[in-house]
Length: 339
Image (tube, rainbow, N blue to C red; front, top):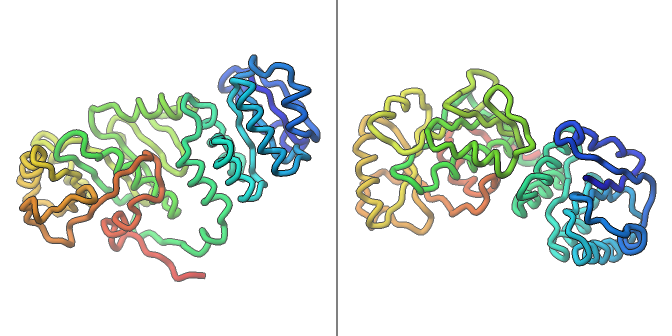
């Protein structure tokens, strides 16, 4: 069950949840004092799995909103979700830092609001790094307007491969897709291996987002299963080939850019050298963990073909390693002059 405290303007905004999840939605619309509602009017919120609060419906001062959220956290087990499409940044930063609430919807368009709500009601809820990314993206419109990009070519195929397992190949590929989406590119990600990580990612983070025609869409990226590479309407196709082997190396023939992800620890070097021997006839970029030293590992490679990637704690981080990815993408991405 869902309890929704809403302004008159947004009363029907989340009706789609009833169709998608079958949940019952109880609505209170009008103007409210959140602290009074939580402490005095709402005798027991525990039957409700989610409590959605539209900040536009509140008459509280900032301090009262913060204390009301803290009281809610101590009294109830329901998940609090905040609709903050018109809220100012200062209040949202206080909510995040003082109450540890991350299920905050900052989008301003219907489709994006729905996407963020689906994340908020997923098993994990809105990750902290994602809400901070959304906060910067949705509220710093002047900054976003200054940093604009143009993209050269269509369906540029960027293939990620790993020298061995657990070298961050999938994380790097999805991070690049998120970075490109933040730049304004139309981008797809394709899982072209048998690891089935994408299904696990969908089931864990986005189980409320439907899979249609072998793909799903979230935060500017279309995700495709089973090696399905879209043939049109994208600037970039990010392809996660998995571990490089003799059996899949021919798949690199479609690549415009090849990125080999590897490590330089002693037990990883054998796999790296094997992968490098397979790539002798290919142009590629080598991505190593930041802090490793390719020279000390006796890796013979032109420095122009080498990038170091920071360890990413957020699978969908659209900011991390952006400079390294820009180096890899080269002339395919052009930063426009500042406005």
